[in-house]
Length: 340
Ligand SMILES: Nc1nc2c(ncn2[C@@H]2O[C@H](COP(=O)(O)OP(=O)(O)OP(=O)(O)O)[C@@H](O)[C@H]2O)c(=O)[nH]1
Ligand SMILES: C[S@@+](CC[C@H](N)C(=O)[O-])C[C@H]1O[C@@H](n2cnc3c(N)ncnc32)[C@H](O)[C@@H]1O
Ligand code: SF4
Ligand code: SF4
Image 1: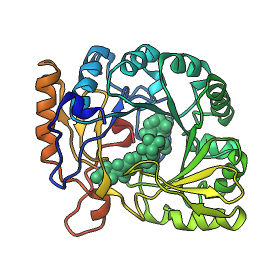
Image 2: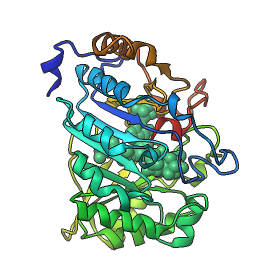
Image 3: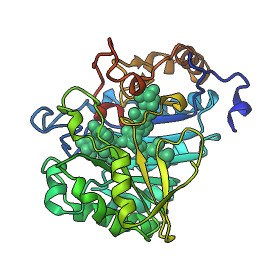
């Protein structure tokens, strides 16, 4: 909607998909070690770039302005754990002020949210997604790699609610035999709260999480389990290309969502670009390597956007649809580098 204001010629990729959505990692480091993302035995305690290797706030602002010229109106900040980035509210305020960014969201593990929710809200953040894989303290702790407490995340959600975030989306990555027994308690806890629990199929992202297809719980199976207890009916997407499929509780107690990248891929409508904390562009969550945008950033917003338009026009990614096909190999970037 805003895009034509800036640039009447908007790029489409080789599969005719426009660029609408930017997911920007502000930091690659994390205080958790979720085994499906950053297994503790493989990712060192002091893992991470030195601060100077991360894009500066000035670079990030130029980058986002450049993406807006190409049609992006939706921006999600992620990580690593984005709340570890120093002076994050200051960055949020700068990004919220950019004309053309209609939707500014952030995904966090929630552990540091209690302290920061109000400042982020005041800075202009409008939407929040908190990852929450379990309510049981022991299961939660194991799924954070022994680093997190569910009580802190629940306190973070309460603080975010208090600060005015509504609805908050709560993302749960489901693994069979690990935390699939947490699904119904999560639904029970948040039904009627105004927040939206979303179940994410465990994905084969990265090369270090030992992904195993037998641990994927297809969304349809989970949906049936929930439906048997609290009847559901399908809802229309909020916008074209929405990643989660939505279901309302028949009794009016809100909705749940399912992200089914493994059992029902959605590449046809994928309008998302991803940029890592050091400024590499990934045109797919499963891309093998990124393109370093930093040199072009130094040449300013217009030259930068022309460069990205060129890269986007050559994009033909659709990994989830091709998964398992002959010749499709796994040489993926790690999830904590690309931000999910
Ligand atoms: N395979 C795949 N998974 C995705 C894609 N986009 C998001 N996901 C996954 O879906 C999950 C939910 O994503 P969120 O960060 O909550 O973002 P979203 O669903 O786009 O959020 P909304 O803007 O609120 O609709 C995350 O675990 C992502 O990794 C995608 O393009 N491909
Ligand atoms: C990489 S994290 C970054 C943001 C923040 N640290 C958090 O956990 O919310 C973004 C999302 O990716 C999800 N994720 C990580 N690895 C995954 C995997 N293998 N399959 C599915 N989702 C995954 C996480 O659960 C989280 O919701
Ligand atoms: S999913 Fe998020 S919280 Fe968990 S290890 Fe990855 S980046 Fe950290
Ligand atoms: S697998 Fe790649 S192309 Fe397909 S929806 Fe995910 S990010 Fe987009």
